[in-house]
Image (cartoon, rainbow, N blue to C red):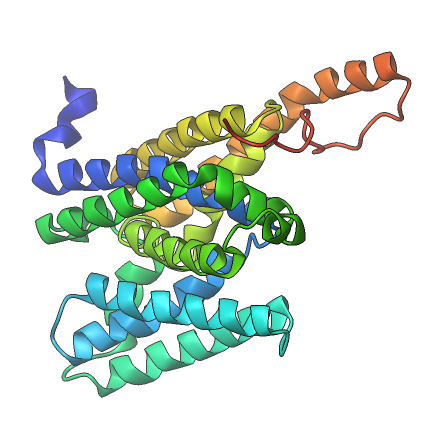
Length: 296
């Protein structure tokens, strides 16, 4: 079929595999970041990962694995700084933004034959540059993210909901916070080859926020968010092939359109529920469901 001719190309097959894995993985971490109001954390980690990519070029090693190491160190450092109380979360995040970007630009120019042009595919994503080794790295990192995000869902949810209560119940709050930071770093690295480092946070957050418009539980939100993630990542990758545009921007714009559609369709439901309960009608964009309940 002519409509599916893109499947004949090996680079598109790899890109679609990566998009599928990313679509499932990103919301698994994003749901915790949204819950703890750290929606921009992925952006900060993405900027630090840029330094890791540049170091990969400098030392002639895998930019993906180097980005994993550097972004994990940056995410842990930010979390330790936040937990120590010596800096607010937004200040720590700002330092990740600026330091990561500056470090990446400086190091890539020190690499043999390097220039900022070499970072373009990592910043915005590119369907043609996803290699077989990238797929291997993406699958390994995604497996780690899913094991942590789903296997420790009750503990992570409790920490994100109320750290003090989680601490009283005996949960290792600091260790779980650091594990979540490392998992977020792995997620950013998983998505950077297709979505791009500058836009990866959107794929972690927008499908979750869109799912919250119509769901009332953690399980429901996660399932719908992963479905949305797959839809926007795969459709965005295919659309970028035909339109010859960066896949990251395409994926994010489709995700925003999906969010707007979900908000518009669920708005009448929220109004009816509010009237039935005798409550003020919620403003546009307010999630239909209550805050997600503790996962089973």
